[in-house]
Image (cartoon, rainbow, N blue to C red; front, side, top):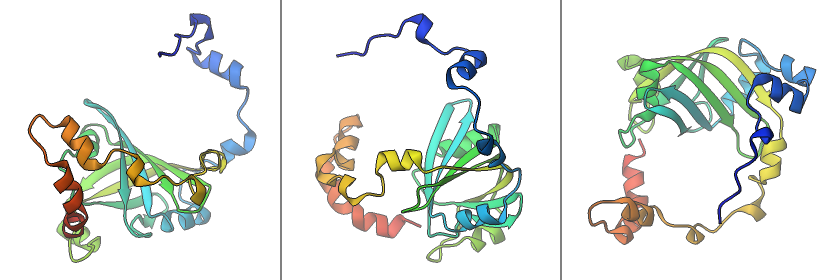
Length: 211
């Protein structure tokens, strides 16, 4: 069953329509946005173990996860952050975008915390050996380091995470209820693929390749 296409007059198609429909922004939502990393915002950044990176480039949009122990986002000064990039599958969708369009947006997520922190800026991708070594984990240097020039920082309230119940134990789903990584890979693969072996061996493979 498909959803009905909304009538043309029901669409919001310009800034004026949006502002009329939603009304004025709350004043406090405007002064939450800073053009530097304040002491309070720095505390959130240092406690963040997981971020979602949004980028844009010729190939389209990308939204990609990054995670490490809290502190992996290294604050250099009030307008500079370093973010290490680890080994992965070499699609490098985020990096392909950034070498063409350096704009980036990060959403910082802290387990158990309702507020999130949004960081907007531009990036240079460094492969300086000393810098990559500075961000080493388990004896493995970072593959590269994103040097982020911070332009805007803004914290967002708890509503979205509260509505989702994401930190509530009662909302957690048994992994067995969803298709496994092996099942999804097999379904998409043009070649024969052993999904059962993939799922069985992946935990050990991840231990060896996570860094």
